[in-house]
View 1: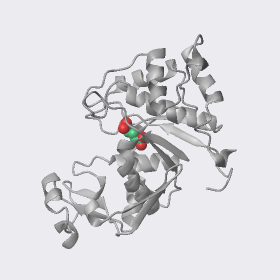
View 2: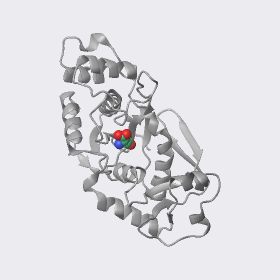
View 3: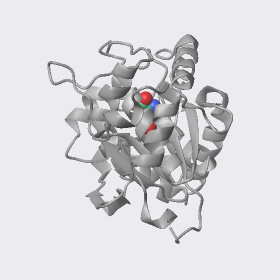
View 4: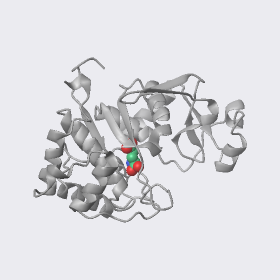
Length: 285
Ligand code: GLU
C-alpha cells in the first residue's frame, strides 16, 4: 500500500452463535483502538451466513453490548445473510475463470485423500446438488503481511479450499473475502485461531484480484483448561464493566490503571486511544 494512499478501514466481524465473551471483546477492542489511533473507520459486520448456528438475538445483544462499551460502527452494520447475491456473483467469477472444480468428497474421504489427489480432481465430475465447489490451488507460495512480518505457505491441492459446501452453504472464507473487498477493509485485527485461514483468504483474494489487507493476529484468550474461549464451548458472557475492560486490556498488554480511574468505560477507551501508541502504524503518520 502506498503511504497515505488509502484511509485506514478496519472491522470487527462476530458470528452471532452466542453472547459476547472475553475473547471477542479483546478482538473488538484491539480492532477499534487500532482503527481510531490511525484516524480510521471501524465497522461491525455480522457473520450470520450459517443459519443453523447463528441467532438474530445474539447479533442484537453483541451490537448492544459493544455500544455500551462505546464501540459503535461508523457505517451501518452489515449482515452477511442479506448479501448472498454478492457472494454468488463472486462464485460465478471464479467459475468463469475456471478456478473451481466440483467435489463430492465427504469429511472421511478428504482425510483419506489428504496426501494424494482427490478422485474428483483426477476424473473431473459434473456438478450436482450434492457437490461442493472447491478452489484449484497451484502449489505456489501464498503470502500475507502481518503488521511487522511477512508469512508464506504453499497451498497445495490437498488444502482443498471450499467455496461452497456440499449442502450449498457459502464458505466462511469466500464470504469474508468478498466482504473485506467490497467494504474496502485495509487492516484486519482478529484472533490467531484464524491465522491459517488468512493464507486461504489471501489465495481467494488473489484469485478474484481483490486488494490485499494487512493483518494483525491476536493471542487467544484461553480458559482454565488451555482451550480457546469460544461461543461453541459456552464461554461465559461478559458484562459491561471496568473489570472486563481491565481483563481485555491486560490481555492486550495495554492496561494502564491511571488512564481510566474515575471516568466512564466509554471515555476510558477514548483516553486509551489518545495515550497508548502501540497500535499506531507508520504509513498513517
Ligand atoms: N466471524 C469470525 C468469528 O466470529 C471472525 C471472522 C474474521 O474476523 O475474519 O470467529
